[in-house]
Amino acid sequence: MINLNRRKALALIGAAAASGLAAPAIAQNRKIVVGALPFTSHSGSFIAYERGYFADAGLDIEFKFFQAAQPMAVAIASGDVDFGITAISGGLISLADKGAIKVIGGALSEKPGVDGQKILASDAAFKAGLTAPPGLGDKRFGMTTAGSSFHYMGSKIGQAEGVTPQFVPLQKVGAIIGALKSGQIDAWSIVPHIAKPLAGSGAVHIIGDVSTFLPHYQVTVLFTSTKNADEDRPLTESFIKGFSKGVADYDATMVDKANGQDAIDELVKLIHKYVYTDRPHEKAAPSILNGSMWLNEGAAINVASVKDQLEWFQSEGLVDKAITLDTFLDTSYVKTIDA
Image (cartoon, rainbow, N blue to C red; front, side, top):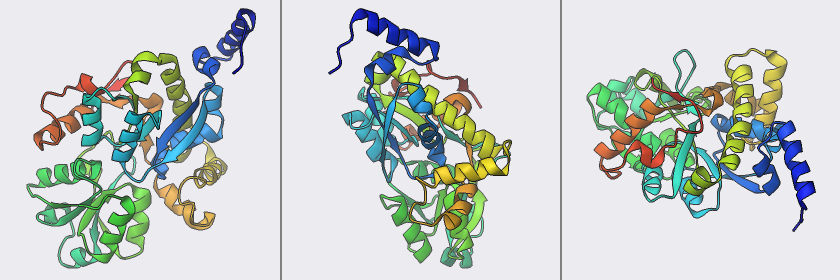
């Protein structure tokens, strides 16, 4: 352990303040574990790490990768992970109700005018007549688990069309992809960097856009332990600061395309370190480009969308009806959106 006398400690804090960093976080020199999925939609954190934005904020980052939202929420609650970026799930809300976690910001969003998540049909189902969302009634719709974002999307799409899909839990995204391609399930909804290559293979067909039914859907959120949110504000603010810089680079380059082709190529190479790592660059690049959905500036959060999700989980009996937004959402860290 390094011992600092008062003089050295003040000097360190002064240097941190001069560089715009959160002094308590840099003084702690903590190693922070960040939960992520190997998706293009998690690029804000990958960019922040690779370009030193987390380090500039005084954080030493290690990534822990998951295949679904629920295990990540459990890892935050247990203390194995410090910060996570994932979709709201029934499990996440229930853990928040137990005082274990808090949502502190927003990440991936559906945004009008920006390409977003697609509704898919298997080739067999498509040939049998499932060519548009109204045909989802009684069709087998893939999801990881009950109360997952896939469950929410499929249910909301079905409600809007006046039909009820049959939901099939398959635990992992890879298992859903395999089941859809083989015709074991009929439909699914997923981010474009997965949807478009699947459709291009001919085994799957795009039959609609999630944004038609959920135009401002807050797809993923930032969350942490209640202890971090309530008791370690400098650390939490430092994480959001670094993450937000990564998001700004991503949106400007990949979504707005304001920085030119060279900047796009550079970011694609960076993201490829984490996404589609089993493919050579030339095969991974098109899928990474296809995944260029909007990430919320400054980790702002769409409270209206979060409220709608909470109400849906409650209406389905997946979480306690007594839970309020304040139970799991801390809006003190970022700007809020109400759309």
